[in-house]
Length: 66
Image (cartoon, rainbow, N blue to C red; front, top):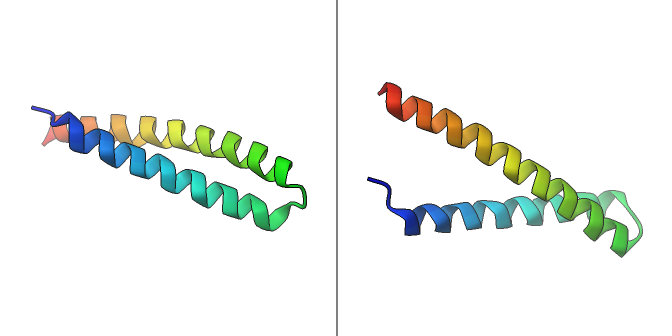
């Protein structure tokens, strides 16, 4: 049985961490604040969705196998 509240809390914290890291990393490489925010949020969304899919499907398959 899945406990949804802790799962959603961990997902939200993961997305927040990815967003902060992406914004800081892009802030070190660009000059314009608008460009930093735009590129940082785009990359954060891409990496969040991709990693949740990969780790989610991989974790589910691992749990089914065990």
